[in-house]
Length: 401
Image (cartoon, rainbow, N blue to C red; front, side, top):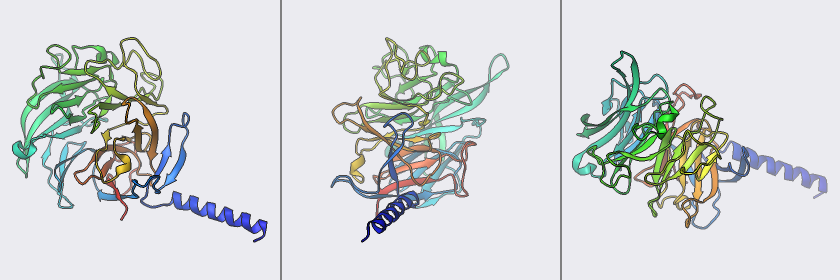
């Protein structure tokens, strides 16, 4: 073949491969977002890099939702979805039920707040308990209104859920920085994140529940081994944490939180932290790369901001190449971020990639399902996204058929 034809042939092949990668339908491409600040480079497209890897694809699970904030399961066939306007929806037997399991009619939803975190009791099959964190407006003694968070325990009888007990009330909140991620740790304790309620100084005060990670028993009482006397506070100095997860082997706790957004500091500085009991994570004393004695620095930062809205560490066998990797949904960054952590050093980040080719838009929650798949929800109908006619939706990553 003449040299000119060889060059033309090579250009055609490369162009075809690039177009296939760009328009590759439901398959993810992996991107390295940490080569340099702001750099994004395509690493590979749907191809395994070791014999243990499996090809994967993305399936739509359910559509027509309104800002799904949390995804949990009460059984392998029954998924509960918290919609921010106050509804806890049921997806069972492959169908989204019209009637919510419960609706919180007093929920505040003027900004980013609403019905947010939901968790399932480790003993759910025996007690039917669910836990929900939501924002509402109350009137103060001076007649002014304020937004606060409330954590409740619910009893689910299979057709409806009713409030069994209020566990914590009047947690400082606001239209922004309302926290409210809820999850059980491997120790069987309930952990709750709280935002700084747009008052950064509260994150440093032990007499305030704002800007903290809280730890409590499932009945709302304080565990005897909490780090501060007579306090639910597990860690402090957080701006707006919305993701907590534990490594399936080491039990190490990780957290993701939003960094400043110009009104309270330089933009960016989203954090991933290793959480230690009693530790101070610095906000608002420090942010970004700044350090200060007595505070703990994040294991990685994101500038420009990704706006991390969740966290899960994959512990299944369905997608073996992701075992031990931390994932979070990116709102501003619009994608699913994967963080590869060193097997021998829980604070060492080996690689950070963004799984994002189909452009799902803003992603909120990410969770591992009972089937071993990775599920994630979009958040395009919350006022900042560009929703399609099917949004909001839940997808899952599964082995390619």
